[in-house]
Image: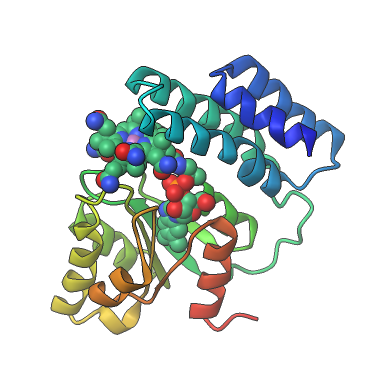
Length: 215
Ligand code: B12
């Protein structure tokens, strides 16, 4: 759809004003799925920015600006996600974060937003979350699910450490652990002893429901 392409292009063009305008337009016109706006519009844009970086056409300042454009657009949309949905009792509590050493926030924040929009209570620890803090927060809030995002191959190991710490403390059975982030694979989930992974925010919601046996 043309508007998704315009949204993607606004991120590639690093055009914050245009991205904000398009996000507001999507909200005002109430025609589009706001989830699609994030995934097919602005999300597609940041993927292309990543590709341009891979190809050596963009450097770090452009990458950061692209991420900022995407984040600001998502910030405008977030309060409106699930706006008209019923507000039933919480489906469960998810503690989510980007793991120690890793500051990639965009995917994790989209997943957190989608979980909230689908009736989960979400405690977002942000980025660079310490292994011990994650487990302590889950305990303090009687969480059901721990969601761990890692975008760097060097930080993925932190996902495994969380599962190990849970086991050491005799807490492994108490929580479902779901992993995410571009480098995560089914094999890595097995190696970590986690419960599953999801490739995007829609799949993450489906996974959380499946792990908690919610229809
Ligand atoms: C934007 C970006 C940045 C921004 C981040 C800004 C921010 N606020 O997040 C900035 C510029 C800060 C950045 C920094 C760095 N980056 Co960077 N970055 C990216 C980029 C282009 C896009 C990531 C992104 O936001 N994607 C869009 C979102 C929507 O997708 P996503 O994160 O995959 O999330 C989806 C799924 O994975 C899933 N998901 C995500 N989390 C979770 C969690 C759960 C529980 C579940 C179920 C699902 C789930 O659902 C999400 C929604 O669909 C990627 C390239 C790429 N194509 O991925 C590189 C990339 C991840 N970065 C990379 C690198 C190397 C770095 C730096 C080390 C660069 C440097 N030299 O300084 C630093 C790292 C600093 C640190 N300590 O973390 C490499 C990693 C390489 C590797 N194999 O480890 C990549 C792959 C680029 C590349 N090809 O080299 N980066």
